Image (cartoon, rainbow, N blue to C red):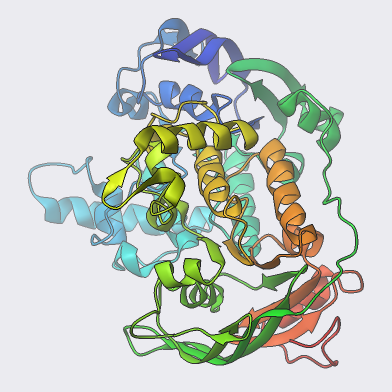
Length: 513
């Protein structure tokens, strides 16, 4: 008997048909993957199962019994837990307080906390979910915050666990640890639904995989009987190149030069400790490293969001690192475009429309009006053209940014920055939470910009992305550059040693910094 069975599920949001007549069976004690392009309807389908949305048609069966799930409380009562792509945690509450929030037993909180503390310790030991129950959420890295979300579901006695893009914000070691946790849950008889766009994860961890495309279920296969190439074609409806297709770089003059760059955060901790590097026209310099080793600060100070000390020149002209002129507007005027790592907090205003977001930072463009008067129609027409070129879905510039999937939000930011034809593109985590078809497209746009003679600084926690896109690789650890490597003659093992802080035993390969 299936742990979950969906029959004929349909859901529309106005004219957009998110799910169309979807049927699905998930067997107990298995890890069932669901993949598809951004906007394919995966998250909508799981939100129906978790009670966030109500289906327009169809029925849900849990362990063979038809159930109504009008809200998340009903889902929890049915033994379903969900870990969302963007965590639902109260940042200034402790781990313990977050776990019991909403399910406090009795009117007195103290007995509830004592009960939860004992159960949390038991769950942590059983499933390798170790985290200090008295730590504030805001003090935890994203990997540990995800553990808290899983603990919340297990504390509520979930037998069925849904994870939506669980590795989108994790480093490779954190993702490997998550997979060990999921394997442990499967051994204990839990049923897991894994929503992801990463084919490697599907092949590595799942027993069965279902493919969605444009709101419909196109295939369900035993994972052992398929391949990444077949799944990619089922997702996109065409053959997809699973590697970066590019010719060797032809570097020109130095565009950006960085000497002795230092950044200290508001707690007095030095995050960049004397960075030296050059980026030339027509090349991609990739920055590899475990998240939290200074890559974010490097992007932020070069993009004018954070302050720093040292010397940075753009096309031979010094860039201010603090005070007047050390801001995003001045950076854009100098020919620098910036795709930030956190699209939702630094790249977009989520409650504003796509067309408004598509003009942010460039609203003083003469094409969009003059003085204090803006030509909204011109901006909307320009956004429609960007939507078509970048295949943004839904193709509606009037929708607010939060109504787009994560991958399509990323495309809005990329379209805005790349289409300005910058001399230097700063780009952080370009394909985080993005599906395979969109990844291929985004990589093509980055390479196209390089081939047009532009300089690109790429930061990504995905080593295969760094190695596939970069012409040179700089490895960062603890705010320093440990060495430079040529991606053609290095490997993940060598990069991993540098990422772990093991001193560079060889001269910088692939050119000077």
